[in-house]
Amino acid sequence: MSEKTENYNADIHNEDYRGQYQEILLDHRSLVNIAGRETESLNGKWHFCVDPYDTCRRAHWFKEVRRNDTGAEQPVDWDFDWWERAAVPGTWNLQKPELYWYENPAIYMRTFRYVPKETGERAFLYFEGAAYEASVFLNGVFIGSHDGGSTPFTVDISGAVKTDNRLIVVVDASRSPLRVPMDNTDWFNYGGIYRDVHLVRAPNVYIKDWFVRLEPDGTFSKIRTDVTISGADGTGCERKAVLAIPGLGMEEEITVREGSGHGVFAVNAEALSLWEPRNPTLYDVSIRLLPEDAKAGGDLIQDRGDLIQDRLGFREIKTRGQKILLNGKEVFLKGVSVHEDHVILGKTTTPEIIRETIRDLKEMNGNYLRLAHYPHDRCFARIADEEGILLWEEIPVYWAIAFGNRNAYRDAENQLAELIQRDRNRASVIIWSVGNENPDTDERLDFMSRLAKKARELDETRLVSAACLVNHAKLKIEDRLSEFLDVIGVNEYYGWYEPDFDKLSAILSNSSPDKPVVVTEFGGGARSGQRGSVNDLFSEDYQKALYIKQVETFKKYPFIAGLSPWILYDFRCPRRFNRYQEGYNRKGLIDADRKTKKLAFFVMQAFYKEK
Ligand code: GCB
Image (cartoon, rainbow, N blue to C red):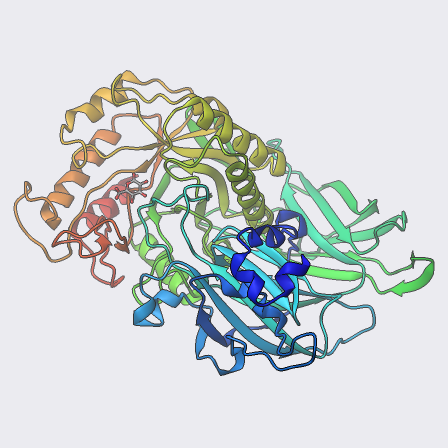
């Protein structure tokens, strides 16, 4: 940091102050997989203050310097411990009425005590989600910044943590055309530390990440494992790890060299109960890093090894021609799209809310959810694993991203990597989506095909897709991105934005895709309780009639391998202000109260029962 910015008053002229906070990026490379580790919660009431002019970062408030060089007391403008409090996790928009539309930086502060449980222990902070950009400061020191509102990040505080700590986080929710998503979306821009924050302890040499899955070769007889360790850098030593799956009688040794180890192990296909919606078997899986004397910086240190454990399902998802195959058998994705939005909590969710969503899906006779349009809470896939629900997970490459901008690409690819690293051990997740409704331009093709390749590189066991637009001029399913996808997602609003419903049949009849097609969106708005004729827009009757026409049409086209109509619940949307909408997108099959089912819900329920 420059001398100039140390001077309190000089900061008002420092317009390029932001660069220093980009110098330490907390991205997928520093992400630690905390699944199966014990953590301590840092949730609770944190001190909170809006910071519309970004003064905490601009004028280094986080250093908490009260005296100048001569020792004289300065008139500081901050008062962290005196500020009111806000709930973490929580969106600020719904905690304080005056902050409903607030979209700029805000400051969070809390203290915490830390007493190591063993020598050499490492300590991390794990943020499940802070929207959109977060800069973290511990005890007056900048530790790093994270971009992306819906993916987790880890902050290694091992070198900076003390017994008594002051943690400051600046969260900036401002929209920008250069971000991912960009400034124009069809959902509400919630801000804040809206997901859990954990303190995580790990041994000196620890398991940083691990990926255990069924080898997708159609034999159901091999389990592939990758493990990454950290903390033994530069020691060059070889380590041993043991993968154990007691339910399958497996105990397998993995050699870890230069921080990573791999193994493919035989599993008795007869004994293996494959994970699937009707039988979502999960196995206890652990990886133990064996203890070893390691040399670090010339000193011999004893490390005790490490152990992580989780419950995982094993299954295979593939395509053949126009079909999607789960464990070698054709599966139809009986789904619906869902946003992460709640009338009272906004984008903050709870395991109870997630279970309620899954109950509603099951009541509709569904087996699949499209988690739109950004990564949902980490708990979702975990609960879906237990409940036997198939998931589509997506990154917010939404509408007209700045496809030509290198930073936007870096941001999108990083969010994709963070999502995949977070959830690739979850059997429920079957599809990674690299975006939604993006115009078919050269720049977009380059941007999104690179993302599709990246997804495959990080995970060879899932399908890659995107929700694409149809070619309305040629009346055809046609998008150059399809070549890079396993499943073609198609959003269409015939009977709503496109009044001529017959065009839908024309499009489907004109198309002979060589891959499965999932209709990722269709639907129309209806205010719950609003009745009328089948011609009255925004009535439940119109919506129901539209759904009947849609599903009757889909039945005729066998290349349609799944559906996720738009959308399960009405959700907040600052682009929707007619008398029926009042700030909500009303295309839900269930009202925003999450209780009142609209007539169209029962159309899908009957259709899925039949399927
Ligand atoms: C779409 C978008 C979705 C919108 C929806 C709508 O095509 O993908 O985000 O909310 O249409 O309601 O217009």
